[in-house]
Image 1: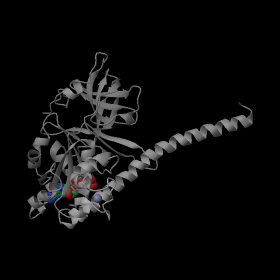
Image 2: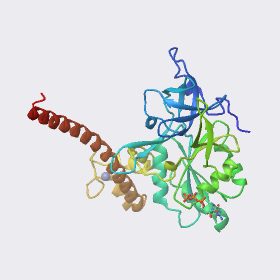
Image 3: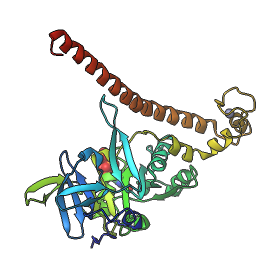
Length: 343
Ligand SMILES: Nc1nc2c(ncn2[C@@H]2O[C@H](COP(=O)(O)OP(=O)(O)OP(=O)(O)O)[C@@H](O)[C@H]2O)c(=O)[nH]1
Ligand SMILES: [Zn+2]
């Protein structure tokens, strides 16, 4: 049985410490976010809430909020936050999931196993503040699944990797240390690697993401795709449509953590702005020459930094453009009204 006490829902001292004497609401954990309302779980049962003085875009699945039973009064500071660049022309950030403890990076023991992709997701985990766990599915189809796990663990000292058959109920036992009561797990990975299969195994449901009917505060029935799912071992699995395949945004620090070996070498280069190409006294090219650094790893590091810089710049530029455009519109409107004799 899932424990839906506050502690069972993931409540901890980090959140309790944020409460002030002025706070009137009670804590609740967001389980689904729709266009104009959200659903939250409390020890007394689920609540349908409207955001008070904010948009639902500022609330993420997994968030801890304070509520008066009808409205979200305030969102508590997050321990971790997974975000991405919103799809479409408008560059903006979209909140995907909050307070995720472990990011399960799902890949399979076959052609999907790709070091560059793993490094990208590891950087995402580091940028979000989550603990990374590489989950290698389809172990039953590989002759040496341990070999894949070893290759994944070699990428960073922070990484643990586990090979399993996502269809086997035993997979839930193997993942138990990351799925205990109060813990939150989210899964990322390419299409077809077994995320849905694993979600079903961990939640014991066959269609874990189907919409369920819930009563909102006024007793109306609404259908919401619930995104915070109870797992058989007592923890919570966040599964939102935006969660599954993610690009990098504002992740330079996360990339630095995953490639800390290159960052440490770069710190020893003679020039602080060394591009590690033809500069004299470059510790990075020296390490490559000495066979201590794989030149492919350097290439992958550069590629991720370029990708991150591109999307981060676009967001910063869009903000600047938005302001400039607003000024332009104001000037044009004023000019137009002046000519019409309104002003
Ligand atoms: N043999 C074996 N098959 C698996 C395993 N995990 C998943 N599969 C199969 O792989 C196929 C794809 O699995 P899904 O769970 O749908 O993959 P997904 O990652 O959810 O894919 P998307 O929904 O497209 O993102 C299904 O036919 C699964 O039965 C595994 O560990 N072993
Ligand atoms: Zn250098």
